[in-house]
Length: 341
Image (cartoon, one colour):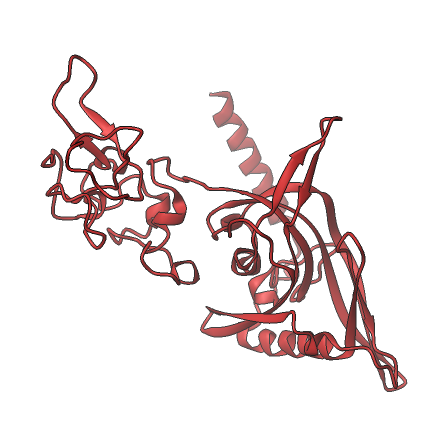
């Protein structure tokens, strides 16, 4: 009851405040077209890349400096480390430039993993004085101490570029700290349509392209819906090498991608139950054993699952070895109980 009273009071206060606004109060500005803003952004980014050079210190901290008239420094646009990814969004093919200063030596994260990173974010804008163009760079956020970020919860540009890098290794020090080695290091130049777009703040103006320096230290594989299948596998077809560059799978078409859906095929049975192999009661040891997602070569002499021979999720008919089989949790036509093998 107290909560309800609070809600009513707050609503009444909001109505009172709103009714006191003058008739000519300023309305929200409509969003600018994405394609129009992108044309401006990519021009700024490419101009910046063509007029600045990069210096990197021993800790992989980066500085961008304008090339003076007659300067012989190599512009960023001519560096062999410069690459780009194309991202289709808002009916636009965005080009996201990035510098791969060091790839890293470990695993690549996917866009549905959590990553441990250190980073620095810059805005930049152009001013012209006496016919001379200059770019002013401003740091809006910096985190030199590693912090965990879920890549599906940050700006789209991060989710596209971070997976192009690999994590490194780490070791524990006697003072309790951790040292990281051979981690991925890079810089990304993100158009505002893949960043904050019109959602400006005190430190980030609306429609601002951004520069991020980052260091990729470590990753965690996520299972968002806790169904026993890692999100990286539910995001796309495991047999498709380009699975992390397209929209996520939605098997039952309910608008909720499989990695966030506890019932992937919409048959009324939880996925975490459908990935288990029903077996007879064995001396009270239980009725099912859980399958990991990835199959290994099956040994017919060991029909049950154990820790030494994990098998992949079988089909509804019990096929656990054919790599192209339709896994039972994605089979819309079959419901438990399933055939055993």
